[in-house]
View 1 (cartoon, rainbow, N blue to C red):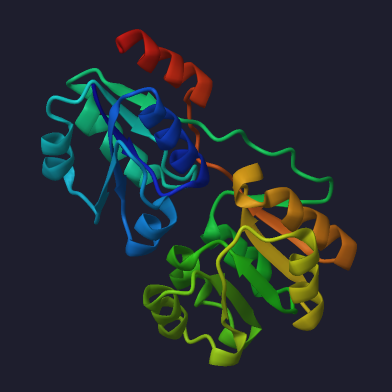
View 2 (cartoon, helix red, strand yellow):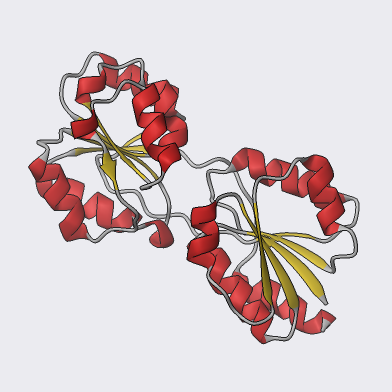
Length: 243
């Protein structure tokens, strides 16, 4: 049985290995070389690197028994494209990452643009733990205020440079991070606001929230896109039935 997993997440890696252990032939699709590096090698798993357009997704899914979308909860466009490509064959399953309880006092906003509007007339330094893709929106703020935490890749650094962020403010690191490391960064750079997404337990959300509370930093959370899906156990049971 051939199963295609769109991954690049912690739970996607765990799920693909569990699926291969059942005896399925698993193709894992990741967007970047870093995603392929994190996926690693395992028996029964073939890793495909690079972004796919609709035609490429449709071709890849031809003949697949299942398509499992294990992309990030905030990768709404990717999920729409994968769902559409898999819809005709009726093989789509969404692996859903559980949401986190949001701490009291959190400022919850719809998107990066709203976060920028909120911060525009509030002075202070901002740690951006939202990923490089959100940086263009935050470029509307004074770049000297911004401390973006991005993946240690050329693309991550280039996004910071394009937003005009001073090099001394760039935190090129790969998470998830402990509460202690988050707190150390907030203290070291005298941060007043932390902007993040609810990446759940896999994304280290609780550790960020706890560090912000400990350091007296205002936590700003970009609201998750609406999503529906299933647990890994539920999808794996479906795979067992097909096998």
